[in-house]
Image (cartoon, rainbow, N blue to C red; front, side, top):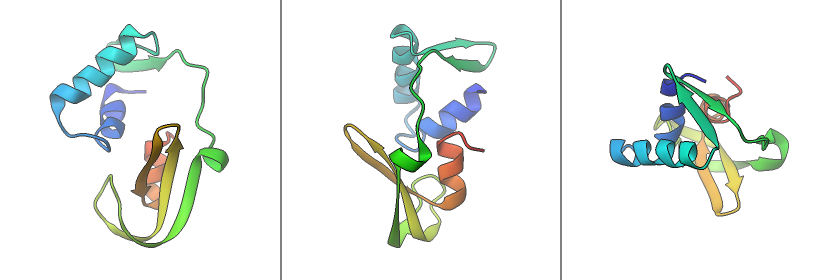
Length: 98
């Protein structure tokens, strides 16, 4: 994926450039990604399963990526907890479906 897409996904967690850089450096150091020529290649065999790892909830939310008001929130489930909410188009971008 292009580095800009990876940064866009990381910015759902933080907009601090130093933390973004640290996340990418740590992932590279741990062998999770390879970087070069503005492109990131993942080395991990784990893939996010949209059906199992994304939870949909109805309510009044604000999309964590774009800031839009949404009535259906999508949350990504990790071992450490949930991340979201995201709207329908933003969840596709965050999970790499678009």
